Length: 328
Image 1 (cartoon, helix red, strand yellow):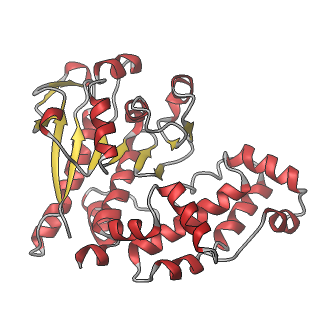
Image 2 (cartoon, one colour):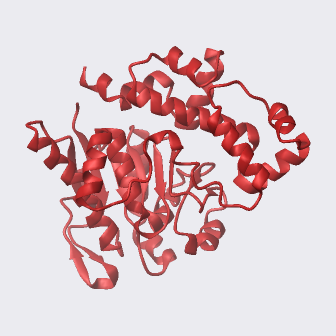
């Protein structure tokens, strides 16, 4: 398994908890690997604009391992939460933005924690995509970044190698999600136990980016969502769902979009693609087997939908994230 270089940014005004908490969780995984006689999986570095950075309103001073000028290539960038005036935070950290964009274009992935979403959104990488942040900042985010689809009901989003987490300590859930994705379920569970973090999922098939989309009062739409999630292996159409729940198609489409911020077709596709992602990450099945398992028979349609949502082809995704493949 190749070592993954992780750059935890040290923004001016960063909240110390999300910065240091992320570092501790990720370096603990290295300790787990060492304890069983294996090489560390993560190279974790703090990366700043300068050699010293003021945090939490000047209460703390951080000394990053490197500055952005010293990091030519990285695999994963973590953007911690910031506090204070968000416009000032964006202005004082703008030197990070072209570096983040450059790294992303070179293949790096980027994860924002809580209000770190304001910094990630300032790069332009989230335009046309979904993002989560703290619910208290919802209005400010929508006003400042109208081209980003804000989904404040989500704990975690995962799209095109861009990740985000909701408010406050939910950043820990995102870090655990990344640990599971890159180091395996066992390591994520161990880290959760050491840091006493609740992992509510038995497995990833609860569709982490969808689990919060039922925070609405339309019970029929909730039942339609649950039906889609329980039957993602089957081919299904909007007309079939409308008929099953005795709702006119146009009425279903209108209510579904209002309740979930997705059309019915988008929701079906995203549930299927989440299931495909988990299979590609964890099983030895080939791409066609995974495709059939999630209810697709058209290879081109499956590949195009998967790439539109994840930014990678199914084969590229399997090569990058499947632990068994990466060990060969």
